[in-house]
Image (tube, rainbow, N blue to C red; front, side, top):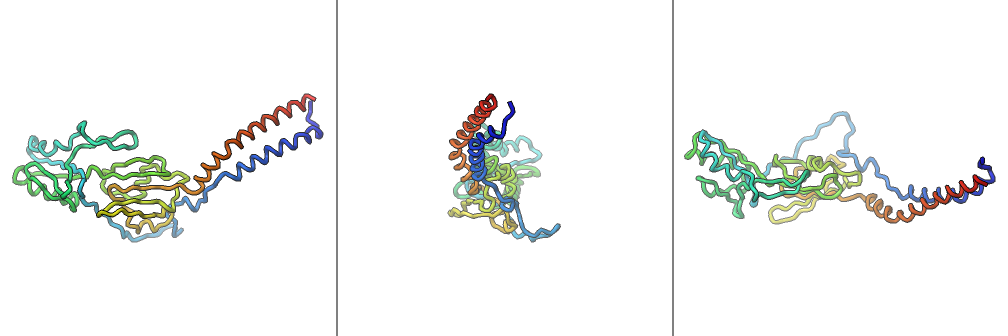
Length: 277
């Protein structure tokens, strides 16, 4: 039977209830301004340049684990130095994307800043660059090996990324030098709810814990002393207010959604009954 104007008039109250509930849900849904999520805002010219003022040279510190790879014309002698770099079941596991990451034992820098190297003995390396440590070891091995070559790498340069990123984890950095944007890229970038205006970097150095707030939407980040990430830094991306409101509104609107679904079902039944009249 065709739905008449009179019949439709009887449906208006039920339709209004559904419309009102839907409007409430749409009103409670949060939106994010494009200006708050665009990185490195500033000069809009097609090309501009900025002088690089931040230069970070990582230094060896106590508790670092060093990989010391020695090469020479005597392969058997090389193994004496390279044995601690092999992977063993006693290695430390770092949680990382894709599962646990096994790390070689390496040479541990003790509390006094020293390492124990075969033939060389105890050697102070804290405060050195890895290249400087390699040169020092090479100079001392000349007395024992023919044409030695030495490569020193830091094995436990790790950074923690928490909060509103796609892949929060502890990341081991093999290059020993990485910037904040690069670390966030490893973590899959910030989610749409990540607060780009207030990213916290927690750093422990020289017996002090520092808390820095970084604004990723401004180009001032490139002049920040926290642009380059240091070993053991913790990066925390807090959620924007919209995220917290959205989570709260979802909890509060579950009964509302149930009511709307029930209302729509009732409306459908009412329409079927009126059509049959």
